[in-house]
Length: 406
Image 1 (cartoon, rainbow, N blue to C red):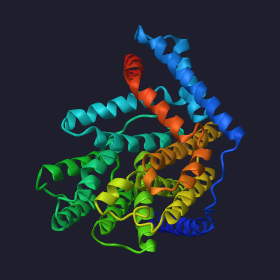
Image 2: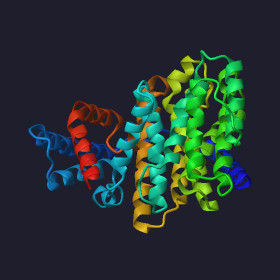
Image 3: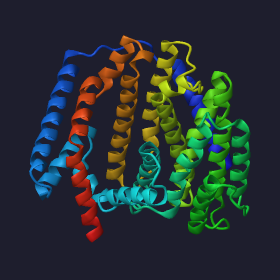
Image 4: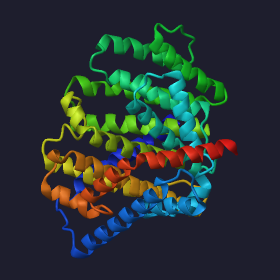
């Protein structure tokens, strides 16, 4: 597993170098036809969202036709056949989300929403892996445990108020526990961490699934190595390798904790997917990382032009990655490819729009031209959705109750 992972990592590093070098700084203009399509699509989405909200305003119950309206809205927004996809995910996706949030609240009632959502995003990645592997969409103990190790360990290591000595001591003990040693927790924080490893061991025995624990040690080592980004300036090549190693190792562990074993093609896709997600996270966190003097590719870029090359290379890498999907259902593979591609473009566009000061007007125009409805109009739709969130919370609550009843 380690050899295959490192080979994949080296391949993506070479691909990144070539795509960064080939990235064009020219900014395509939005043609009148493209602008008209963006506006028309935005109007369709706004009308659809408004129609659904008005239907729900007076009563909480849902008819079959109104559920279809929601699926059509999702289809239009993400350019997928959500009605048909719903048949694959509806039985478990909402229930999995609700169950995860409830388990976190029961165990850590004081945990902030940002940390819960961070962990939940990892659950959703694992749900996608379940879909691709044609497995039921459900929450397992190992999935819950690994997703909670993010806010419990990674965020703790990112805390600037904790000394380097404390972090080093914790990392050593964490690594020993991951290797299978029996340790008595020194404090509540360690106790929480060790209890998550207990959950994983309850699902995957070390003798039958050694690669699960190799993958956990892989992400642990990547976390430890990434601490260098907090202390000193690094060369571009060092930053690229640290970023790629951490992102890839994280999603490789997702794969092993969902499937137990991974094929070479699955390792290849998950390595690339993890890299793209890590780059997107660093792009989203650019302002906060800069404020805390945390060195990433985006905060360390010498100019907007260099930063833009990284954005372009990330988009090229994500497009290449979509052709490496593994899926046993041909129709579902096409839908997941569209969903992942569209989600990544929306994620990158939102991040750039929210941090406009780091980019030139020409760069913003270029991203805007590639966006389905345009950056500004997408933000307007999101605000409209946030204003109507109680309506949709009612929908999800009812859907979860129906699943529980069934």
